[in-house]
Image 1 (cartoon, rainbow, N blue to C red):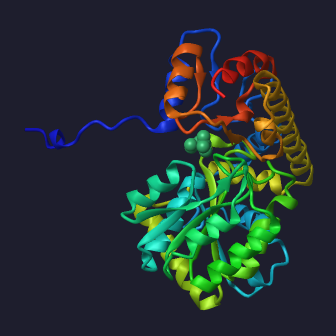
Image 2 (cartoon, rainbow, N blue to C red; image 1 turned 30 degrees about the horizontal axis):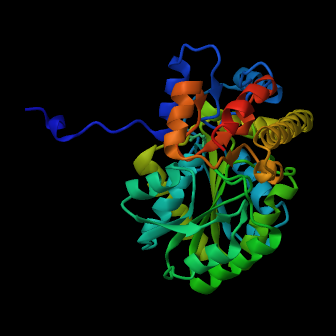
Length: 395
Ligand code: LMR
């Protein structure tokens, strides 16, 4: 008898299953609002030009493929520390920060939840709704998932979130998303971030800030304001930083896991635990994507070129939001979806049921997960009139 006969077949992952089904759909008129990747006017997800140039330089200069070490590319780590903490944050000089190259934002998430577990955390709070892989990783590490209210009537719901988190026990973990919340596109204000930081401190919560869309909300400079305000109040935090979207490095799995601590001794110990956990999982960090990012950010010209490309992606996403929102307001005769315009990043949620998302896919070739999340960054402007007409039938 096979050892594997005890296993039953699992359903496909929500987003990856959708990606496969979309690619296999032979209909010419189909609309991909599923997995979160940016697409240009030609419907492609291009390699950014700054990335392409950095990659060529990197390969040309490379003389070895030998392991880099537990923290991976330390230039990369320093650049991401600049982004997250700021160049002059006193904690850096005091040895109260640490950072590791990890396989993508999800590798950082895994490092963070593992670290929570090592500190004795038993349960982890996630926003309702959230990115499905948040609860997935928490459960895979054997911890309990709890959820907190996040948005109401198209706005951030601070009172609901604070009320739910007031039930949390000291030592509980919490995942809070940085700018461009996935799936709602709704972000806390600076004031909200401060209040959340105070609450985390008061209640002794261990918070992981998931930053996957830096530069997609307002600008590279401003997008970290909330995260930094939170850290100033909370004193300690872990940060999962992804370069998948803002540098378009998706498959290169380029992420950074960072920690801010109250004491140098604490951070020295944490550093050994992150290294130990990495060794027991991926053993050595991936080098290629981090090498590209270090090359882009370490060269004034490439960096300026990347910033121009990033700004163009953001401006295009904002334009698509406006066009889709206007088209939906017109097609439905209701102002309800005007809020799409004020949201940030790649995603928004449509008020549709899971059953309606199935019908949208089967009848009309409109692909979105059961949650009604739509990836605005994947839209083609020429599809907006037809798409909004179809969607209006369900809104
Ligand atoms: C998404 O939310 O669609 C992306 O972050 C891709 C993923 O890995 O789920």
